[in-house]
Image (cartoon, rainbow, N blue to C red):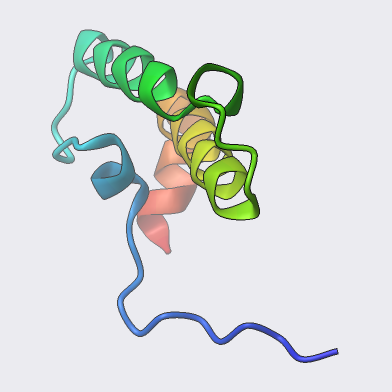
Length: 77
């Protein structure tokens, strides 16, 4: 089975959520809520793999950046 090549430009979790590295908890929450409403497959009707992947990436970004320990580990990479 062929693997899909990764794009040359990787998007950071900060970019996914539209945040800078010095965001506040309120900014993170507001960005998450706004984007999750816009990208949720049940709300948009976009059940294509790309649509589901976009929401999954958003969810992962929020999970990592909302937890201080996970965020430190992510930033250390």
